[in-house]
Image: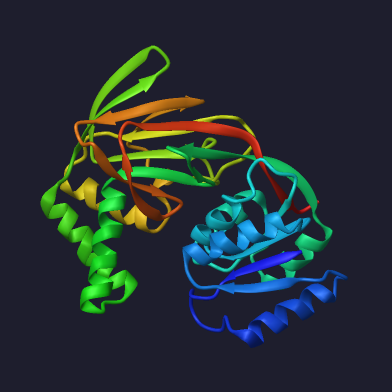
Length: 293
């Protein structure tokens, strides 16, 4: 099996950590080839190499962005995907019931069952949790710029970036095409989930299943500045699905067009620039994941 760890995230991910992980897997009778990857390109390259070499199990350790990068190379294969939740939010692991404690997550890889889950896709890029347009990608871009140029910490930079977005009060003019229907919207935020998010009760912001074969589309209504601030913070903390001020639609595929030829798009927290129109679709049962029995 291959174990791919995001070696650039946080501290403690070094050769000693790799040896520790090999020993933990060996205790369950599993031979782990551990790779410490530095950044997205190395994560993807390691996952691609593991698939090409015929590994039966590929495990990713890190946050949701790391999990996405490795999983993107395993879709439409019979390779079992194991998850070691080592990030801040760990939405994918939580929604599948995968333990957050490292030893328990390793035990799950060794003893869990395999199940197939859906993935979302936008213009060829997959997402396991969600994709978004508008406010959130803009805040992330501004936050990263402040971290790089001013040396600010992640959350301080995020705060300033959110306030800057509040001053701009940005809105997107969109055309949503679902089947033969078109809907014009002017909104600060569009959120597309891989399957449906619970919007009421004690499990608000969670997904009850990841094999329903649907995308959930949430288009923010036109909030005031205070509502815009709340949306920004909810997005940064990964709790946007808890917001109730949305128009909601469930679809299998759709197209989003704007007057812009290129648009910033977030997928599982990573922001890229894509050419419009944006074509979203659900890919049912595209990924095999090891989950608790």
